[in-house]
Image (tube, rainbow, N blue to C red; front, side, top):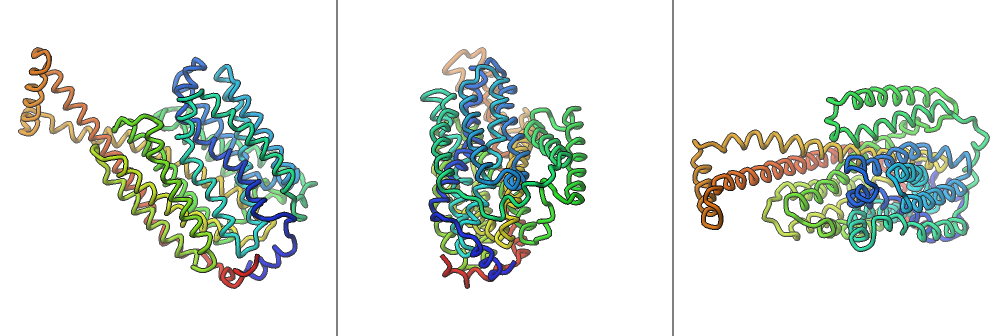
Length: 526
């Protein structure tokens, strides 16, 4: 659609309340939900200990949420048209809030996993509904500002989540990371009831036939995919028989799902929106953003805690300045959309993100916390220049009645990108450290002059301050400990270099976008 058609499409229905009031209403619940995807990470050891579970079993607290969340996300538009979007939003907030209370009251691992599944079901629809409501409530020329508001929530929440979760767990109890959702959820229900309304074109399909087969195939495929990505490294990937079978099931189910949705007259997820070039390119790029964002968020706390010895809360505080950079850039970009070609903004964002990840590739074991904070600020700043124009260009060329369906798919691909990013970096980290260790250990030999000299120095030092009989053994242990740290450091560097390369590869893809030429001309519409 061109700019004039989009303006007319928006003018055919306008919300009764201020778009900014509507934005606060939908983002309240969305921020709460996105925060919950990461807030429980640092509390897993406490949850495991409290519920008499092993650390490996406790990871299902995260996996169960991600699986149910992934299943609901792409079907959000269909459910909204079936039940009415406002009613569906209120139901989802209610389920999420109730499930949060059940999580906090859990007395066993099974109970909290079931509660987390319910949380994922309720929370899965909140992101795409919020995005759709924002895009429809603001005029086309102001959709950049709408996506800046949305971006503030979905980009900063995963960053501050681990820090907040660690602080609450250390000072109160892990149960309060779920209980804090109750007042927020109650306020979100009141706000949504008062200020959210359904456009006339939402609900036109309420009498449509339910595609049970399509939904079943989607649930099996996405559920299997999420479990494989989340448990793959823990189970040594395809060395595990059940990972192999689950991967086969995932491929077969998703292929059958695509065929089914393209052939049925009333699909759960309308995949024909990928015929829109901007949406197809944008979906590919947002998947890459998910890989880099969640990959970096997973790597840095691990680096700070395992190699530099930072406590969980301090490592979170070191990483959290990324949120400050995101806030600043999204405020700026919200004003630049419509004045500068969005493709150039996205390209600048990816170039800046590549620079920040390349700086991380220069980490060492002697750095101060400020050496991590500043690249994080730059990385957050880059995310604003990517996220806002990318979302605007990807979805703003679609007609309003397709936005609900598109936002579900778009958010699903960002989340899948995040799961791929975490799986990729954790696998490369473990296997890269082993590879570097195998290469470096070849130098720990009596024939290496540097090794002999270091061993002699350490042996003398241990002998002077302890038992001479064990000095040589302690010296060997110290050298091997240093080797393990250096091998791990090299693996971290490899990961950051890979993420840098991915950012650089995304830059030329921005040229595939069809320019939204009407933005400048429509900038005066309010």
